Image (cartoon, rainbow, N blue to C red; front, top):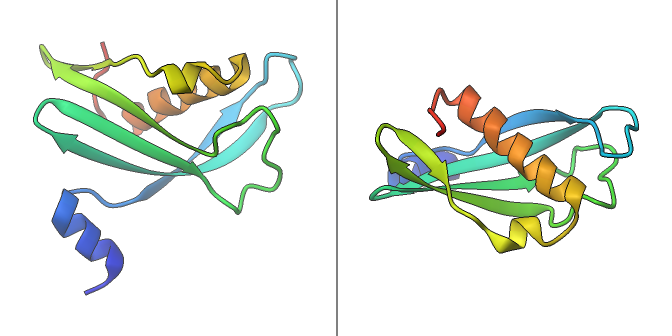
Length: 114
């Protein structure tokens, strides 16, 4: 049994990828960043774990950390994002990128966000 299939059996999820196109706050050119992500659920809490892939040509200096997670709580038919100080403490572009990545992942997975 492959590692990915084993992960799928254990968590009900498999690692996926998505490209996020982001325009930094300095209005520079759009940057395309490839993320690997995994979604895990425990009761009504969902955790999306994202990692910037090594295949991304240039990882911007502002994009720190290279691995982050976003937690949300399922309530009234939608996911409400839970505040994570670590995602917002870095810098404006990192925080905005994480928000944009979460929105794109939720859209791709057809999950409703409140």
